[in-house]
Image 1 (cartoon, one colour):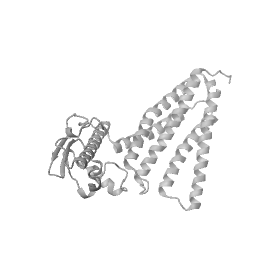
Image 2 (cartoon, one colour):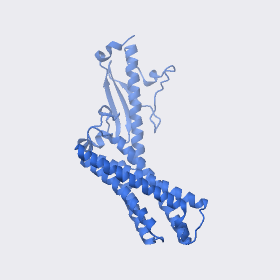
Image 3 (cartoon, rainbow, N blue to C red):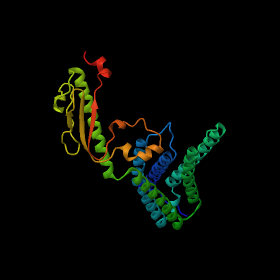
Image 4 (cartoon, rainbow, N blue to C red):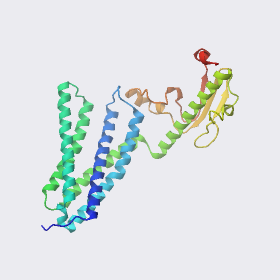
Length: 311
């Protein structure tokens, strides 16, 4: 087989292919890890909202990076079919051997960790599933590219089968994440409601601070506005209407808003019974809400604030 020179196009395609391969593998493993975390929750290390955020990030990365990997692989394959000598170009072999090295090193490290944990008596089902995930990913990559190095010609059928199986796996993984996280429209409504809850929390803090300093509740939310502290009465992020504020008695008041979704704790009541309670969730039980118009009644405890009422 006669030699052929490496063109800038070859360098571009091979670098793009290998980088998108690494991104796809990293975020594919990350996505499976989050599914394992949901299936086998750890009471000492569990953050449901954080897991959903990672699922969104990993799914987004796979949606972009994996099709680019498949596309560049096909372009390289078409180029090799037209010019078989391109299968032996330096950039291709260097990158493949680098990939084999990284995959082999990952497998060796995982096996060392497995043996270490075995001797330490700390092997859990969650650990084993994650270890198997890494071994399957890296083992598949190692086996595929080792096989490709050993072939003199491009075997189209086997390459297509590998791409088909990998694509099917990625699609199923993304679909699972889509159902767990929710549609983009649902996520927007959740974010809007989170903003409403955050606004009410800020307003509540300002009302309490106002009472501590003046020993009386503000007549309206506009009374809280202060050009020195910079506080401005927040508006509904979607409708830009004012939140409802009502004085009940000398120490009690009510804050109301129109919510588009049920709060996390209500919507996932059965889920929260199964998983450990997430104490780091800022939207705690004190602000749970159903869909629609919801009011939160608050009563100030003078004994709790009496040490700082006036200064």
